[in-house]
Image (cartoon, rainbow, N blue to C red; front, side, top):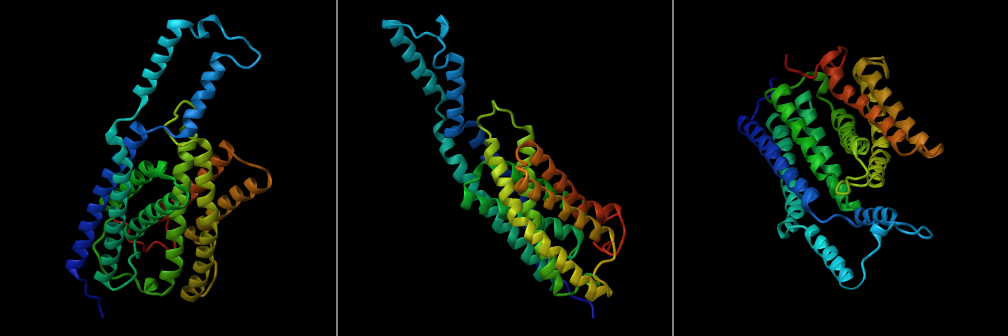
Length: 334
């Protein structure tokens, strides 16, 4: 019996997805204004102070005459100029509101995003990740959810601009190139395993996206960019996201094997999706193992986790577009 689609709910879902993109873009602007014009965090000021100390001489090494503070009126003048420079660095008053507004808009976007997923599911009476469009929309939602959790738990607001723009681009790509009308799915996807296997994969993917964004920023950041998050903060966020996401991805792979046995009569068949899911698991396991046992940190560790992130993205998107196999029913528009 064909499944009836609630056209009104399906249309509402599409409209909420577009509204989500708009909210994320505006939130991204708020985060960017906070990064560009807000108050530089203490670590950045400390680094500047250290650089200034090194430039002006260190203990036991006399400073150059040009670096010697003037005496008398000149000293007062120098102090005044320093105070003036400090005043010039004070952020504009409006920047105080940039971050709170951006966070608030992110929560509004998150709520609209969640509602768009729920209404899509209600419209067709099934779990709303039965094709590539729905999966990418859910994966972007997981990424924003991971960011909001990390922001509450660890204060990682500095990633807001980058996560929101990545999610907005992901949603835009899904709407433009992957969109399919709400409707029924193939019988293989009418299973409770969708709620188990695919949900776990979506959650882990959202956390890995957080780690991937942090890794990319780590590689492009320069020491003079004091307004960007520090290398230590970026590495810490990436590691925490992977530590949480890896066991969830492991569970997703195991659940996928159990579902395969129920659907196709075997646990593992070296299907392209299965192969790349396993490659992704090995890559993230290599990152965690190297970091835990060999002190593999810094740039080298970030490169390894970005290789794992590339494997993840190819597994989630590339396999469905470029490769065939038993998972080719994901309805990628031609």
